[in-house]
Length: 226
Length: 226
DNA sequence: CTTTGACTTAACAATTAATTAACAACTTAA
DNA sequence: TTAAGTTGTTAATTAATTGTTAAGTCAAAG
Image (cartoon, rainbow over the protein chains, first blue to last red):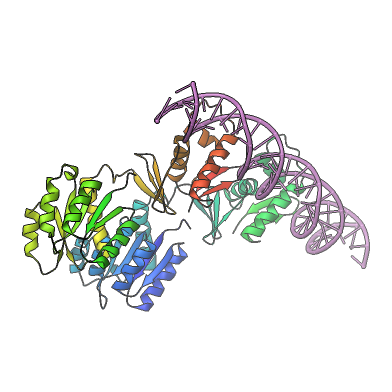
């Protein structure tokens, strides 16, 4: 939904698969094209936040494609990054000239690739890659700012109490919260809700997050752990 | 109302239709004429911001028309762009001499045409095609400068409060604004309006923008998302 | 193998929050 | 001054959430 979109363009299906896999794992929405003309069309259609563009391709090469993409109004904020074989060093100059924002030499380790892409996107789209998001592990990310939770990169929305409960537990993974702790922190000092109320909220969270992340300690309380 | 006006002049109805379609899609107000004399009259009447003028036409050709239009007081700020077949290179000289601001060779891809036109208009009419317009997604564009909003390129006008509310929410898509946030930011620190007031304004916005873009988070607040 | 205490679960009730329509009070422009 | 539009209020309705109850599990202890 509010994900950043990346368009991959390369004529080798293997490379496409490989990059695609690694970027999707990071939560990006990934689109692919295998040659320049297709790339331009895709770019127009999905208006990606970043395009990873192989320089050497049959038909229309990366440089040409880049120039065309730069003229698209849909892509005025799009970052364009060239993928070049290490030897093709001319592409640095030609590419940046054609309107590219950066270039990356192949071969590259996925981690390095991902971190460079993240850095570029952060610089350009800071507001979307926000501070108050934190990854609590177990595939769960909590964003305090917009009261939203991502589970395996799928956004789910929680009602207030459930969110607060999750937030409390997840903010100190591993720590055990007694029922009393939880009542005081979430319902306040002078509440009169029954004990079962907590259980029920825990259950609702488990329904949404999966049964593993919140653990019960009989007679003691609950903890978040992954 | 505050749209930029473009006058298309060409003797081939097909070309006229084609360009007209592509430019209207971008939100311009498009007028057409099929020959020079008609073009001059139209120009006088609608005082367009830009005229796209085919060079080769029966009766009065583009160059003649251009010269006449340049004498009209209604068109002193009008940009005139010639459309020329790629071969007619003399037109570059003659055209620019006659008072044209640019020329574009046919055939041309609509995207390229549109982006060149946009660039020209932006340069000349910066104030209207301004930085403070931003496309917040979901087919909604907000122009802070003249308090106007476009939904799917249809301009709708919002009363002040509604505009401010939309602007606040849309300026940080995804972020949740609590009722308190909203009250403070829009009504000021020492407000005395009831809570339901916000709801009512939200409802009015939803009536105008569609129900999807503003989301409710019960017990928390509202957020803009597309 | 029953009992017991502690948690889970489903169904439902109570509560709280938001939507909506109708309208009143203000503002502005004609 | 009227008319039109904007802004804020209220009250009825609708919807979602939060909380309760009671039956059901499960594991450890007797």
